[in-house]
Length: 511
Ligand SMILES: Nc1ncnc2c1ncn2[C@@H]1O[C@H](COP(=O)(O)OP(=O)(O)O)[C@@H](O)[C@H]1O
Ligand SMILES: O=P(O)(O)OC[C@H](O)CO
Image (cartoon, rainbow, N blue to C red):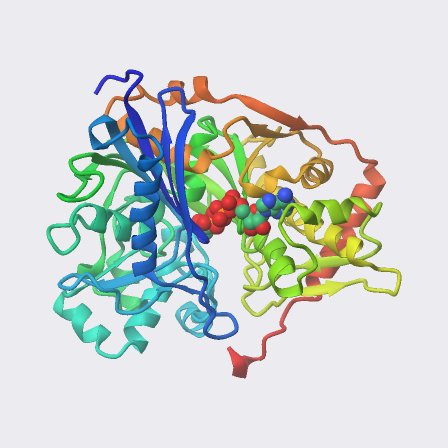
């Protein structure tokens, strides 16, 4: 379809806290938005679930709201739909009824600690060469194993071929394309690369790992590229007949939307968690420093592009926790107002290891700590420590990335940023100070949804390719490093010390 002023691309962003539908025009500008939050279910300490049915209802409503607010838009002038999603969150459902057999187990959930330990047989990196990931509670495969082991009747049904597994992209696409009436069961290479079940080099499911995890391969979606037509919107839906033509895990989508197409280009997305990805081109670099190797994107039948990733479990969700669990602030933006009332952190360091520690530590037995407290510390200092924790964690993954990339002659010279927390200018300045390189925010902050829209639009010829993405990208603001070197190193040294205080907290018997 050739672009004109009345054709658009719709992105559906199924995130950890909400589902959004965003309509983009050919210039990559937002036309309308629909958004609904879903419940965060915490049945026990360390467990995090979502109701997959609620997610599907919210996706439909978000699409309806998005299209409803642009009266001239309907399925006839939408060229394609792109899906992006929270990654690793596992949904298992019955293909005959369309009902999930259990709540979706979210990426932050740590219930698989024992499974992961047993699978590791003393070596958490046992599967790393094949799938790019260390054994950790974060990834989807062990979550599927947990469901099959613990939900009554699930394993028998799975072995009979009645159950399907998918990350939330698969769940949404299956439903969008017809569900029990012929829904397509697919995922893309980026999401598949977060399951531990896919070979990074061949982009096929690995039968040996599936067997070790006791996961029947009949449950698995077909692995496709990130940019091709997978199916069309179902009869009777808002998107009837529209090609579903792009799928990218949300962090990979942001990397795409930020136009990080050259080797060495990196972005960091500051949302619930924080995820830094660096494009490493067609080369698979296995991290020696605690990072993940993941698929960055694959356009149609072209070769895949890979990335190194530093995943941080808790960033914006710490701000939410300060709001909801402590009541120190009324909304997220107030954390900055509070922090601006003091000059520094007053000696306080907050390590938010609520789901253990992800990159570069991978310690699921760590738990959060607020250290360095004296009677001098007030709530302004704590707000400051909350903001700083995101920047320190980012510096840790960025140093790991620099170390991995150095041998290949790749250097991080600037960092593109996006996500809700980039509204916090105190954080952005502190981030530039800590990294020692400029931090750059683009004009369209919704880079995740935009990336998925581009992947879908490229598949149907609405956009021609990466050059359109590069041409549409525009800088909004940049922060240059401006701190004294001694200060920078002193605070970082104390942060590192604070991190060590969180290690080895969870006793074996309560795992
Ligand atoms: N001004 C701010 N300062 C600090 N954190 C913020 C600010 N505004 C939003 N946030 C945090 O950013 C997150 C929302 O960002 P978003 O990109 O929408 O996240 P996600 O896609 O993961 O749901 C929330 O966790 C919120 O606490
Ligand atoms: O939904 P977000 O933005 O919190 O992202 C979640 C990540 O994909 C988890 O790996």
